[in-house]
Length: 343
Length: 292
Image (cartoon, rainbow over all chains, first blue to last red; front, side, top):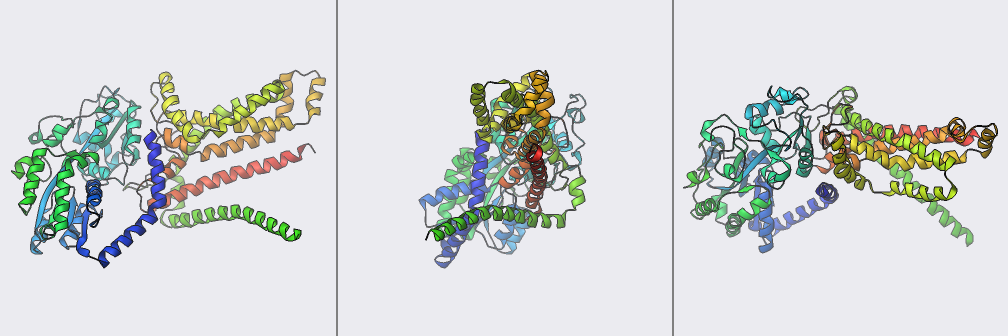
């Protein structure tokens, strides 16, 4: 709980400092354009990928203080729009490029290099004292979390009749987080569409604290947070009723995330690099740096890294400047086995 | 020369006192400004009568009642703890305890008021809640009961100390008159002293209520963050102050309707405590005149 207070403190100080930082940003931007704009790497896109790119950029800047990396958070779709307008060099994406975006690139004669960089996984967890939940189906999760459930689905036995007639206490990611967007999209079917009567916090420590001390609790957050609080929580296996991703209910683990059987709450994350930009030396070294340090920085940012073999394949893909999407049309993002696709 | 010196000091003192007034006016101004623009988008009727509070979600509902249900629930629990305990302590200290005991206990009690509230918050979360869970197994990790009790301990010195002052200020003749009529100590305390000090005691209780309603840290840490229209003290709730903390530390964009909600909640809190403070001010005035 110390960390809750810490985040409050940090939050307050960040809030207090924010006008100053934005000022700083502007000045660096203007000096960058005034001097050599070529030394500026522009990235935009998914807020989910942002922490990874941000961590990479920070470390990269230590080694290359002359290169300014500016990273925007317009969402994956917004990022691709800018990518197509050639406003940015790299697009952060929490999904595979869409066919429409791909054809827009082709018609504007933009070639891109598609690089998977990490997995994103969400865990649905309950209190260890909860003896009745053995697994949940996507259908049941939807019934529990969709907006129509607000104020109506309030007891465990409303989800499955055999479960006790006790109140259910819900905990989940705050509305401003990528986790919230992802969970609602994967479970309810529409991003940001959720019931509102649950403990919503951007601070995962609050959620862990709440669930670990409440027998009637159910919540969700990033898989890494479960990993670091294993002893206090119980994982719920999820059944998506699609046998092609593995039969029955599957619990998330680094293993099931990596082999894409834990669905729909895991997915690969990508960066898309404009091939023309990649010819610029600083972007070349930035992407090289990205791929070489991804494994370490991805887990530090709270995501599941790809296997070293896959990173080798990804690096080879970048070195060969292989353009176009290997993932497009392959089962959408569901059940993507990165290794097979890249080989 | 001396006159100039005096003038400078006087001006300086005036300036200092004006700072507090302008700060207050500034705060009210900001609250009002943001609240007015909030109520351009949300009807005040919905704000006061709707039973759900989900401004951060896509299906936005702006009923402030769940937040204030949380605030009042924790406040009531705190008062249930603090009023009987505080009054007993104050009666004991003023009527029964000898002078030396009183001179030790009173400052020690007031130390309780000096404990940072964040410490109380952790105390509620990591100590009181697990303890209560042994007695009430159904108690959730975040609940209104535990922070309510701890908040009661926090406002205890406010009630005991101010009430004791009020009892102490009752003219001696009343007490002695009561003894002369053959009343026991307890009869004197209950039938003479407490009624005589009534307005002073009420002031202390009202100040304690204001303090409890505005309390932020304890409930933010231990009561949960789920707006819920309930008077069940065993489940997670969210108070008005917690909501303000939650939104202001999150990533809600400024100038959005979500952001403006914190000002509308803030001004509601402000109005409630302002009313309470005015009642206490009015009571105090009466009390000062009572025995002159």
